[in-house]
Figure 1 (cartoon, rainbow, N blue to C red):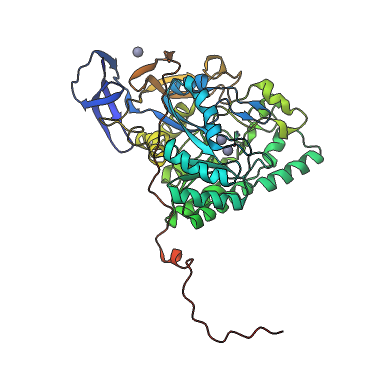
Figure 2: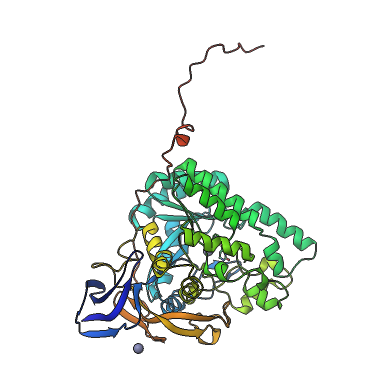
Length: 484
Ligand code: DUC
Ligand code: ZN
Ligand code: ZN
Ligand code: ZN
């Protein structure tokens, strides 16, 4: 059975043109004019784009004494509703646990996915077992991205010696290092001080993680990655200090990418102040929301290309779960949702405002990350042979975001009441229509794991500066005798 998407305008990261798109067996088989198929989808007035890829989700994740509320079923249903056709989730080993055992848990959870998915492997501790497992994970499990937490001291955090060891191992094997870049030692101390002074409310979460904490860790990770020779992807870049470090690294020819979240691009720190407890706590995430200057910096980065990908860090907790932190902000589970709203919010605040072209929208929601993950052009492309993960995007369709009509399992939405213009008419996952005009037709278990091979990119600025760090022959005379 073939499906033809008729009368739309194809928009990719670099081209815009009128064409029909024919899909058969889950892949794109032809792109051209006047195509026919067994079934027709009308794309008149719409853009036909690669489905979104959200490379940063935490579905059913054990965290801060509970589990994030959206699982692979509700999370991928929300994704498809908003035009996202692939998610990448983080598999987290417990301390001392082998990476492969952790992956088994993620394999079990992900059987319910409605759309394709992949995993990043987290390195939450260091030892010989992890050293060995990294090789097995890259070579046999199709995972080439490894996340390191520089925060969450006493839980997920790894120290600099562990970072360096892991980065070197990844460089050797064709892995890419990911970092959650916040200085965990400083956060721990600031948090304790705030609590001791009686600052127990959710706004103290923001005080405990100022932009310097993120800027310092981002810069440190960049320098360590440079010494290890590993490409580096910085997740949830939220402030100018972190963006500045990434910008500088890029100008030096380093393979470093930054990932702002749709939440940081569109919501600011006023969400924490003079708000009722629930409102503020529902928006507690790390890093916290920043002021408007930081937002400007992130938008500028997307426009200029110094920031590469827009993600969500979708990690949804119910109001009841957030209330674990009444009386102690450090116990509020960190995380916000966004999977369903990322594409419409970015279109509304990026494309409709003139900050991004439709092609740039495709680049930052899909194509760039497909290349970084090493699954392009299977994903992130409208090309013959690519997976038919497509969104037929109606730029005139609008709605008001509301928890009452969302797919996520939680009882609120951080974008509640926001108007969006630009929504999917159809979302296709490997050729199957999962969403038609807001009507959800997802199929639990349809999603396949996307394996990604080791990459050949290294992080080497091929400049004379780099040479200076290599040992050079020294011929020295006049060495003083050691005195006794
Ligand atoms: N930040 C969050 O807010 N939630 C999940 C993990 C993280 O780093
Ligand atoms: Zn993080
Ligand atoms: Zn995260
Ligand atoms: Zn219709």
